[in-house]
Structures are given as C-alpha cells and as structure tokens.
Image (cartoon, rainbow, N blue to C red):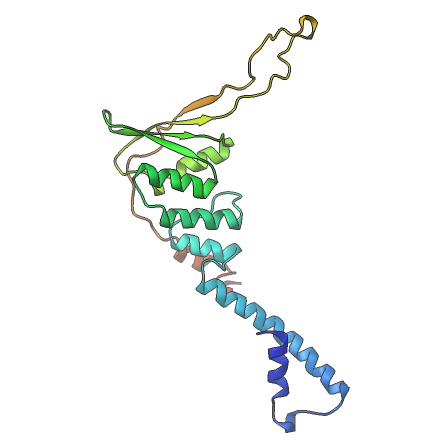
Length: 218
C-alpha cells in the first residue's frame, strides 16, 4: 500500500476515533508512516514470493533452487536471472540450444561442431573467459548438453595480444616478436560427464535453514 492509501484508511475510521486539529493530523501521519513501511515491505515480500522476475537476493536464490539451478559464486541478480531463464527456455541437446544458452547466460558468442564419426561435439568460444568463469561454464553445460554424447574439446578464440615490447627500437622498424597471446587456446574437458540426471529441487533444504525465508528460525 502507498502512504496515501494507508492514511486514507486511518482517516476513514468512525468519528469516535478521530479528533480535529493539526496535532491529531500529525499523529495520524506518524502512524501512517510506520504502517506504510510495514505494508510496503509486506507487498514486496508477496511480489517476490509470487513472481520470479520480481525476486531479488535470497528470494531469487530460493526461486533458482526451486528450479534446481543454484547461483554461481559472485553472480549478481541480473546475470542469475538471465542464466535461469536461459536454462529453462533454451532447450537441450542440440547445437542451437548450447549456443543460445552460452549467449543468453554469458552474453558471448559460441559455435558447436559435431563429430559424427566418434559421436562427440566441440564448443568454440569467441570470447576468452576468466579461469573461474570457464570452470563454471563447464559445470553449467550440464543443463543443455546432449545426454550420452561426450564433449571432447572446448576452445577459446581471441584477437591476440599487442605488439608492446616486441619492437626492436634500435633497428626500427624491425619486429623481433609476434603477438604476446596466441589467438586460440584449446582445453580438454574430460570432467564433463556425458550423462545428465534429472533436475533436483534444492529449496526444501534452504527453507529449513535460512532465517530470511523462514523467520521462525531467527
């Protein structure tokens, strides 16, 4: 409820409970302000419980765990919402599903190649990731990868490094070195299982241990 709505409710009481004058009006305003903070928080709580898109913080974690998709380490709310939506809507098992998932969850482009001879697939990222983000991607691929089909290689493509420190200024314009960074790096992904289990909701454990979701534990 808005402050004006709360104040209107208070002033709609029978005349027996009301008094004329500015002093009583100030008392009503003070009571309305306190009730407004309570009703505003209550409305926000109801919205977070009823709507995934309105949820933030711990309540967003609860929604994600209900879908079986926990938050990554250090993941902000907006990125977490995008990743959960990507997992729930991108489909599973096809190259298109995998590339859409990477694009929606990480905002980077990727391509998938299939090896029909060995029954396998390869993922090529067009933007390099930090080691932590790369390892997290390997974990999250379980939501969209084809069950029973192994991923043999992940590759990161970059634009290379700079020529800084590679120019011989004494014999200019001779170039003594090449780019400082190779344009692509390939990684073995033996840790990605070829088998995908059904999603397991994680909310019951959270509800029984988190005082924000269950104030009775506080």
